[in-house]
Image 1 (cartoon, one colour):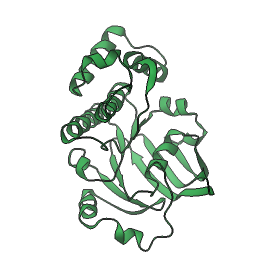
Image 2 (tube, rainbow, N blue to C red; image 1 turned 180 degrees about the horizontal axis):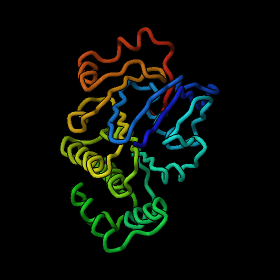
Image 3 (tube, helix red, strand yellow; image 1 turned 90 degrees about the vertical axis):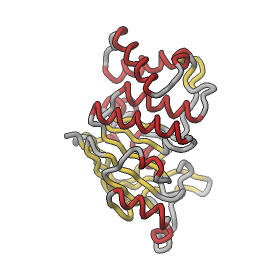
Image 4 (tube, rainbow, N blue to C red; image 1 turned 45 degrees about the vertical axis):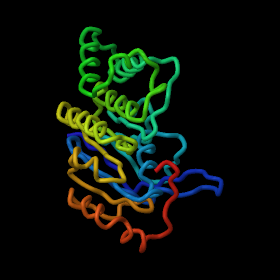
Length: 260
């Protein structure tokens, strides 16, 4: 069984005030087929964790490790991480003018698999996934995320997830900006991907509403760049009722995370 393991991870970022620590000894183990939810207040370092796993150059790992099936993820380039089976659904998906959704998806699939998919089967898969996500087929000919609404961008992220079939997906606040209907559709897409491939999921969120549709096996509370409490789905319900005050008050100075 594939395992994504994070051990004693320390990460900094350069700000106007100099080098700022964000992650302060974070440890987490995710096995394929498991869903882990990370919750925490703004500035706790959640998005920094997501981007560090993906290999964003803005963040510097000063100590600790990330490994995938024993292989050192930190030694991999961004594209090598993707080929190894890591996927990031971004909180703020970017527009790519001049590149159509169709070309983007096929190019990504070819890069990850090392060979181009069969045209007939690929076309069938794309159409079915778009139908499942209730995406207008016309979006296939549009430029990536250009002119897309927030909900359309998030559906496109899950379309990539379904088609690229990674081993582990980091979903960075995929629920932000979604209405109830879009939230259900996106959640159903994540659940389908997990059922089909045994996907391991790291779900980053502020709120419990997405956890009504994507049931977590484990819930982790993140404050000041570290995990301060862990539990099952019942922990999310407790956070909904009590908030984060009991974790923040005794904590040291919170980490700064412009992305969270």
